[in-house]
Picture 1: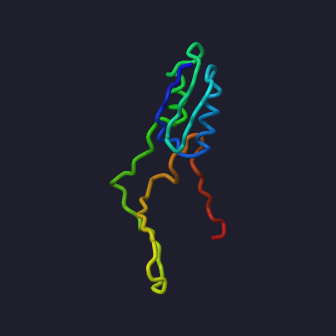
Picture 2 (picture 1 turned 90 degrees about the vertical axis):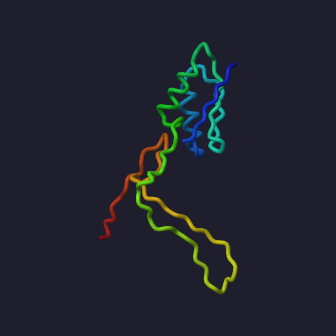
Picture 3 (picture 1 turned 180 degrees about the horizontal axis):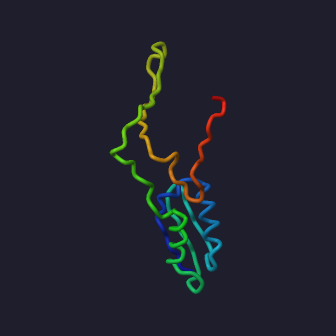
Length: 124
């Protein structure tokens, strides 16, 4: 039984693994699926008489799993950064600092899921 592998940079959560399995198991001839959100790879065992690697790739591409995550636009202004603060009494501590970049959308694209819809605060 032939196998085909696809790099899947947009596969970054367990819910994506489940969605990939749902999409590919709907294709006739797909026998086994190994999808890893850790390694960002999808490996499919299939019956060549029923489905082609191009059809499998097409389904994955339509769902958005084979495309790269969008790069942060360098022209966007940088937002303030977050950092941990420790009082002097704690002496040596381990902290963090993170620079946050503003984006034009509310969330990273998540294949299989729509964008988050904002809700206005009604408490005024």
